[in-house]
Image (tube, helix red, strand yellow):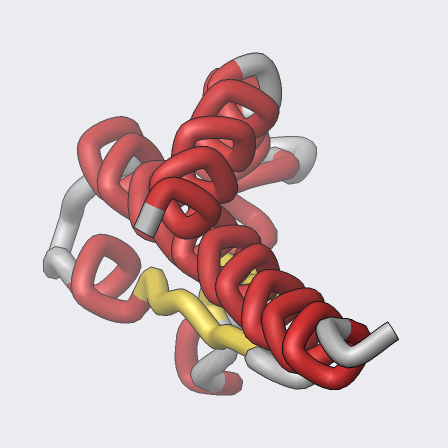
Length: 116
């Protein structure tokens, strides 16, 4: 079994490449959600559009899209509505639109990384 150490190294590299592909797909999906939501959010001052951000946790291969600035607390009122403001679920709708695209995006990025 003289090739076993080489095989183990190649498998380690392959795992790292797959992880890189997953992270890229997660980041691209999060950016797509942000872009779609920015286009659908109600605009008065533009603060909600500008304040919609993406946070990425590389260690957990996770991305969050939202309004994380406490000064933009009223984004929840716009998204979910109140007794006097009708709901405009811009972020929710954008995330739901991205949901069916994510598996294809993920597969393409993993295939791209494996093929390198």
